[in-house]
Length: 453
Image (cartoon, rainbow, N blue to C red; front, side, top):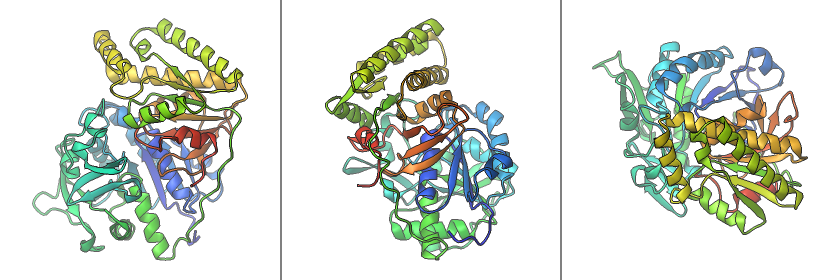
């Protein structure tokens, strides 16, 4: 990377852990030294890692309420702004997971624009490398060999927390705030500055960006970078970084890189999954027939008290240790897709408990994280996978890790990372996978060390 300046090119705040990590992998594997922190870093912490050009924070904002955002986002955004990045990116899911009540993108935009003097807010969700496309303002996403409009997507239309009923990106986000006005940008608009609506200049202007191929992606990256002084705050998926990298390469600012090779097969691996995605269900089924010990974790324990949670954690730890002692890698999971009877039992138990679903999911994620942490501490295993975006956020916090760096690629958005910690988890090799991400044999791919194929 050209060292025209030591100033950070970019800082990002991920609304879930897997997505935050996906930004880092795009940057790092493109030759931009990057690090992802689990809490807001100080300038002194960042300075410990010489040569960083991009810094991120991973969060669980996607699973939180607007009140949580009011309490947590201002300080996190301020910490990143203190690092003086040229762009500040609020990273959202490439399938737009959010609603006015949970993971509100609209509320995050309000908070950021109240802190930052910025013009219209670009919103780039599409990422063609991941089969995510925006055309005339509408988002489309791949599933298997097919591409679906978002509101007809077989996974996202059935999402257990934020089912997608709207494919128009601008409309979806506008519904999350009464201060937003959305418009659509396409590549034929060039790099002209995004315009403020003269009808109501006091409203927050967001501009959703069409992107469906390499050409429109490059045009989007050019627009983002050349307008960074007037539109410093950007919202979107890792498509933002894909677009910027493509523009930087085209202009000679960045030299194309060969991705790292596999980290090699490991001697023992532990996987935990809180995902109910059909994609993850297929991965669990494949793993059951290919050398993994699939072990159910009863999610209804999270609807009870500490005693129920503790008993289930201990049971699963014992079963996992037995599997490892027999030379088999444990894959711990809460459900095998949305049609698994375990999913219906959990939903019924959650409703009967009278507790709020985000609180139950936090307890469940923490319990899975504690299970993983104890298995790792009691064995010599040094590689693990956490499957599920929200699960990754809650579970990773149980490992006393303060940062992650990229180690080996797989598919975009699901690479293998190296953990940084002041304790025994330092150097742990960890993969974080969104529920709908990955090939059928993904867990085995990570067990073999990743690497492109």
